[in-house]
Image (tube, rainbow, N blue to C red; front, side, top):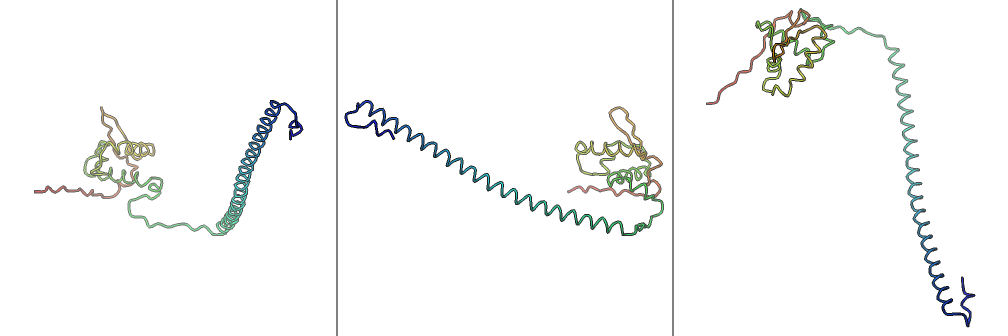
Length: 194
Protein backbone atom coordinates (compact mmCIF):
# COMPACT_ATOMS: atom_id res chain seq x y z
CA UNK A 1 0.00 0.00 0.00
CA UNK A 2 2.80 2.36 0.90
CA UNK A 3 5.24 0.90 -1.67
CA UNK A 4 5.97 4.30 -3.21
CA UNK A 5 7.90 5.13 0.00
CA UNK A 6 10.17 2.08 -0.51
CA UNK A 7 11.92 3.43 -3.61
CA UNK A 8 15.67 3.18 -3.95
CA UNK A 9 17.58 5.74 -2.11
CA UNK A 10 14.88 6.49 0.37
CA UNK A 11 15.58 6.98 4.03
CA UNK A 12 15.88 3.70 6.07
CA UNK A 13 14.03 5.26 9.02
CA UNK A 14 11.19 6.17 6.72
CA UNK A 15 11.21 2.64 5.37
CA UNK A 16 11.02 1.24 8.93
CA UNK A 17 8.16 3.57 9.84
CA UNK A 18 6.25 2.63 6.69
CA UNK A 19 6.68 -1.10 7.41
CA UNK A 20 5.47 -0.62 11.02
CA UNK A 21 2.46 1.32 9.72
CA UNK A 22 1.70 -1.43 7.19
CA UNK A 23 1.97 -4.12 9.86
CA UNK A 24 -0.23 -2.15 12.26
CA UNK A 25 -2.80 -1.46 9.58
CA UNK A 26 -2.84 -5.12 8.54
CA UNK A 27 -3.41 -6.22 12.19
CA UNK A 28 -6.20 -3.67 12.58
CA UNK A 29 -8.00 -4.94 9.49
CA UNK A 30 -7.58 -8.55 10.64
CA UNK A 31 -9.08 -7.65 14.04
CA UNK A 32 -11.99 -5.88 12.36
CA UNK A 33 -12.51 -8.95 10.16
CA UNK A 34 -12.58 -11.20 13.28
CA UNK A 35 -15.05 -8.85 14.99
CA UNK A 36 -17.38 -8.91 11.99
CA UNK A 37 -17.12 -12.70 11.86
CA UNK A 38 -18.06 -12.97 15.56
CA UNK A 39 -20.97 -10.54 15.10
CA UNK A 40 -22.14 -12.55 12.08
CA UNK A 41 -22.12 -15.79 14.13
CA UNK A 42 -24.13 -14.11 16.93
CA UNK A 43 -26.56 -12.73 14.38
CA UNK A 44 -27.07 -16.17 12.83
CA UNK A 45 -27.61 -17.76 16.28
CA UNK A 46 -30.19 -15.15 17.29
CA UNK A 47 -31.89 -15.41 13.92
CA UNK A 48 -32.20 -19.21 14.31
CA UNK A 49 -33.62 -18.82 17.83
CA UNK A 50 -36.07 -16.20 16.59
CA UNK A 51 -37.27 -18.56 13.85
CA UNK A 52 -37.72 -21.37 16.41
CA UNK A 53 -39.73 -19.05 18.67
CA UNK A 54 -41.90 -17.97 15.75
CA UNK A 55 -42.58 -21.64 15.00
CA UNK A 56 -43.48 -22.37 18.62
CA UNK A 57 -45.79 -19.33 18.75
CA UNK A 58 -47.58 -20.58 15.65
CA UNK A 59 -48.06 -24.02 17.23
CA UNK A 60 -49.35 -22.42 20.47
CA UNK A 61 -51.78 -20.22 18.54
CA UNK A 62 -53.11 -23.29 16.72
CA UNK A 63 -53.55 -25.18 19.98
CA UNK A 64 -55.29 -22.22 21.62
CA UNK A 65 -57.61 -21.98 18.63
CA UNK A 66 -58.42 -25.70 18.92
CA UNK A 67 -59.07 -25.36 22.66
CA UNK A 68 -61.31 -22.35 22.05
CA UNK A 69 -63.34 -24.30 19.49
CA UNK A 70 -63.67 -27.26 21.87
CA UNK A 71 -64.83 -24.97 24.69
CA UNK A 72 -67.44 -23.37 22.44
CA UNK A 73 -68.75 -26.85 21.53
CA UNK A 74 -68.80 -27.94 25.19
CA UNK A 75 -70.64 -24.77 26.26
CA UNK A 76 -73.24 -25.28 23.55
CA UNK A 77 -73.73 -28.89 24.68
CA UNK A 78 -74.08 -27.82 28.31
CA UNK A 79 -76.78 -25.30 27.51
CA UNK A 80 -78.72 -27.94 25.52
CA UNK A 81 -78.73 -30.46 28.40
CA UNK A 82 -81.84 -30.21 30.59
CA UNK A 83 -80.94 -29.71 34.22
CA UNK A 84 -81.87 -32.73 36.28
CA UNK A 85 -82.19 -32.49 40.05
CA UNK A 86 -79.90 -34.82 41.98
CA UNK A 87 -81.75 -36.85 44.55
CA UNK A 88 -80.02 -38.03 47.70
CA UNK A 89 -81.59 -40.50 50.04
CA UNK A 90 -81.28 -38.80 53.38
CA UNK A 91 -80.66 -40.73 56.55
CA UNK A 92 -83.01 -39.96 59.35
CA UNK A 93 -81.97 -36.98 61.45
CA UNK A 94 -79.27 -35.53 59.17
CA UNK A 95 -79.81 -32.30 57.27
CA UNK A 96 -77.73 -32.62 54.10
CA UNK A 97 -78.13 -28.95 53.19
CA UNK A 98 -76.18 -28.06 56.31
CA UNK A 99 -73.51 -30.67 55.61
CA UNK A 100 -72.92 -29.42 52.06
CA UNK A 101 -71.61 -26.08 53.27
CA UNK A 102 -69.00 -27.74 55.51
CA UNK A 103 -65.66 -29.23 54.58
CA UNK A 104 -64.82 -32.84 55.43
CA UNK A 105 -62.70 -31.78 58.42
CA UNK A 106 -65.45 -29.46 59.67
CA UNK A 107 -67.93 -32.34 59.45
CA UNK A 108 -65.54 -34.56 61.39
CA UNK A 109 -65.16 -31.91 64.11
CA UNK A 110 -68.95 -31.61 64.44
CA UNK A 111 -69.26 -35.39 64.53
CA UNK A 112 -66.64 -35.78 67.29
CA UNK A 113 -68.15 -32.92 69.33
CA UNK A 114 -71.61 -34.49 69.03
CA UNK A 115 -70.24 -37.85 70.19
CA UNK A 116 -68.46 -36.21 73.14
CA UNK A 117 -71.66 -34.34 74.04
CA UNK A 118 -73.51 -37.67 74.15
CA UNK A 119 -70.86 -38.90 76.60
CA UNK A 120 -71.71 -35.88 78.83
CA UNK A 121 -68.54 -34.07 77.78
CA UNK A 122 -70.24 -30.97 76.41
CA UNK A 123 -67.37 -28.56 77.02
CA UNK A 124 -63.98 -29.89 75.85
CA UNK A 125 -60.60 -28.30 75.25
CA UNK A 126 -59.17 -27.94 71.79
CA UNK A 127 -56.45 -30.35 72.86
CA UNK A 128 -59.04 -33.03 73.77
CA UNK A 129 -60.79 -32.48 70.45
CA UNK A 130 -57.48 -32.81 68.59
CA UNK A 131 -56.62 -36.02 70.47
CA UNK A 132 -60.02 -37.51 69.58
CA UNK A 133 -59.70 -36.56 65.93
CA UNK A 134 -56.03 -37.40 65.43
CA UNK A 135 -54.92 -39.88 68.09
CA UNK A 136 -51.17 -40.21 68.38
CA UNK A 137 -50.37 -36.92 66.61
CA UNK A 138 -48.44 -34.15 68.32
CA UNK A 139 -50.93 -31.47 69.42
CA UNK A 140 -48.51 -28.61 68.77
CA UNK A 141 -48.36 -29.55 65.09
CA UNK A 142 -52.14 -29.59 64.55
CA UNK A 143 -53.24 -26.93 67.06
CA UNK A 144 -53.44 -24.09 64.51
CA UNK A 145 -55.40 -26.22 62.02
CA UNK A 146 -57.96 -27.30 64.63
CA UNK A 147 -58.24 -23.72 65.87
CA UNK A 148 -58.82 -22.39 62.36
CA UNK A 149 -61.54 -24.94 61.57
CA UNK A 150 -63.32 -24.40 64.89
CA UNK A 151 -63.26 -20.62 64.31
CA UNK A 152 -64.92 -21.13 60.92
CA UNK A 153 -67.51 -23.43 62.52
CA UNK A 154 -68.13 -20.82 65.21
CA UNK A 155 -68.77 -18.19 62.52
CA UNK A 156 -71.28 -20.58 60.88
CA UNK A 157 -72.96 -21.13 64.27
CA UNK A 158 -72.19 -24.83 64.72
CA UNK A 159 -69.93 -24.47 67.76
CA UNK A 160 -69.15 -22.05 70.57
CA UNK A 161 -65.65 -21.27 71.81
CA UNK A 162 -64.77 -19.95 75.26
CA UNK A 163 -61.37 -19.06 76.61
CA UNK A 164 -60.69 -19.82 80.27
CA UNK A 165 -57.19 -19.04 81.41
CA UNK A 166 -54.73 -20.58 78.98
CA UNK A 167 -57.19 -23.13 77.56
CA UNK A 168 -59.77 -22.71 74.82
CA UNK A 169 -62.95 -24.72 75.33
CA UNK A 170 -65.40 -25.68 72.63
CA UNK A 171 -68.91 -27.11 72.56
CA UNK A 172 -71.56 -27.89 69.96
CA UNK A 173 -74.56 -25.68 69.44
CA UNK A 174 -78.01 -26.99 68.60
CA UNK A 175 -77.24 -26.27 64.94
CA UNK A 176 -74.73 -29.17 64.83
CA UNK A 177 -76.43 -31.66 62.47
CA UNK A 178 -74.83 -34.68 64.17
CA UNK A 179 -76.47 -33.99 67.55
CA UNK A 180 -79.67 -35.52 66.18
CA UNK A 181 -78.30 -39.05 65.87
CA UNK A 182 -76.77 -41.61 68.23
CA UNK A 183 -72.96 -41.66 67.93
CA UNK A 184 -70.40 -43.84 69.67
CA UNK A 185 -66.71 -42.98 69.36
CA UNK A 186 -64.41 -45.93 68.93
CA UNK A 187 -61.63 -45.83 71.48
CA UNK A 188 -58.22 -47.20 70.63
CA UNK A 189 -56.98 -49.52 73.36
CA UNK A 190 -53.27 -49.57 74.02
CA UNK A 191 -51.97 -53.06 74.74
CA UNK A 192 -48.97 -53.26 77.03
CA UNK A 193 -46.19 -55.53 75.91
CA UNK A 194 -44.97 -57.90 78.59
